[in-house]
Amino acid sequence: MKDVNAVTTTLPRLGLARPSFASVAESELDAVHRYLLFLTGNRAVAEDLTGETFEKAFRAWRRFDPRRGTPRAWLCRIARHAALDHFRSEERRAQREDRYARGVADVEEPAWGEGALASALGELSPAEREVVALRVLLDLDGPTSARLLGISQTACSTRLSRALKRLEELMSDARV
Amino acid sequence: MPASETVDFEREFEELVRELRGLPSDAPAAVRERVRALGEPEPRRIFPQLTWRRAVVVLVPACVAAVVGAAAIHGIVSSSGTTNRSSAGATQTTPQRELLPPTGGGGADTTAKKRAPVFGQALTNGVHATTLPTPNPARHQDYQADLRVRVKDLDTLGDRTARAMQITQQLGGYVASLSQSSTAGQPGEADLVLRVPVARVTDAMVRLSALGTVLDQHVSIVDLENAVQQQRQRIRALRFQIVRITAALQQGGLSADERLRLQFQLDDARRNLSNATGQNKATLREAALSRIAFYLTTQKPIAPAKKHHSGFFHRAVSSAVDFLAGAGAVAVAALIIVSPLLVLAALIFFGVRAYRRREAQRLLGAA
Image (cartoon, one colour):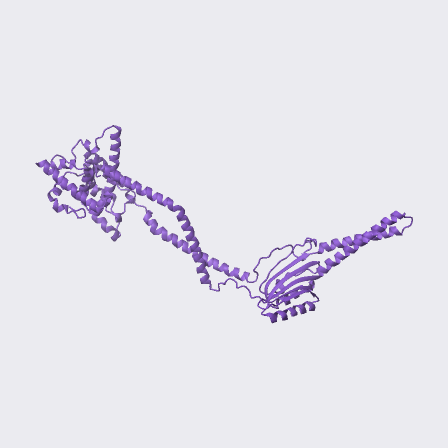
């Protein structure tokens, strides 16, 4: 797979044309889906939000500036907004239906299949899964992840460390 | 682990990371097809979008350059204008007070009692015959002038006073009054009222102004033609009345009462005629002789405001700086007015952002 993020970092200096949307979408689709899957903990929702994310990105493609960040970080920001909108609407819907269960608690289909890791991931909060997804799965660096989450780098590192430790503890508990 | 420490999760959680990366999380084919179907958006516009950063970087220098350019143009234009104004002001420091119909015209008659100045002018830089309003020899006019002249010292003052009297006599006039004072420690002054034939008043003014440095001059001409004509008509009417009454008295057959009444009328008419003739003579005398109030002084002139004898460039720069100061004052005033709104907008912006972040944390369970 072509690494669009690596290419775009050289664009400003070389004065080259920025990548096409189609190539970015092709290369970043799995990453965005993975991020949303971890963030929502729901495979069906993640698929919907992935499609929605790329539709929004398609409309906003003119505003994308490679000098200000990688396409992956830009797409993740859009995906995050889409996910937050989804959570808000779910919350309103739950209030209307007088239910207090969280949206993520309504998982009908296991997002990561069976096993200790999958069940441990289900125990983590969306914020913890989000930072794991960004730093571990999507390989975003600390400053980019922190900026995307709207927190400091220190807070981002702390959150990641705690999430991984908790995940490890949950897995060891499950194995025992 | 301290919060400030960089997390080397790859090494610390090596097995966990490997398991996480091994999770099946690729996008399904349906989503991939949906995204592929989007295709390629319209090409980006040729003109770059104007972000707020670009606006600050581009527009602010552009505005500053525009203001500076306007200041430079204003400085150049106004400094050119200053030159013209200063040259005009050198010969005429006070504007013309009134400019009524020209004295040579025939339609501007006024009565002697309603004297209105038909021309007034003040000069400070010497008097020339061409700059003086001249009386119209075809009409009767009252010509009055005030002339204030500065001389060097008391000796010169006495000399110039005598010279002014000589000039007056040479021109066929006379000195109506003279007052001269020369107290020690005080500026010397001479106050003369000169009566000069109107026909030679211009010559008198030129010669008098040459006696020193002219500080102030004012000339006033009042047309008396209408008054003279009215007086003459009245004289003619009175004479006709006297002739008529005299003829009536010389007729015979008048009663004593009638004769007495006519005699009273005749006396009255003669008295009126005498008055009218006197008034007419006085008017003609006034029209024949001009009145010049001539002041001589040794008083040093009050130092005028320091004139800028600097060059065009200095004036232009000064004017441009004034313009920039004005623009700055306007900008500061606008900022004072707008700043509360800006502060309010900033508060709203940061408040909304903080609220959204907090809400996002709440939604994601990261409180």
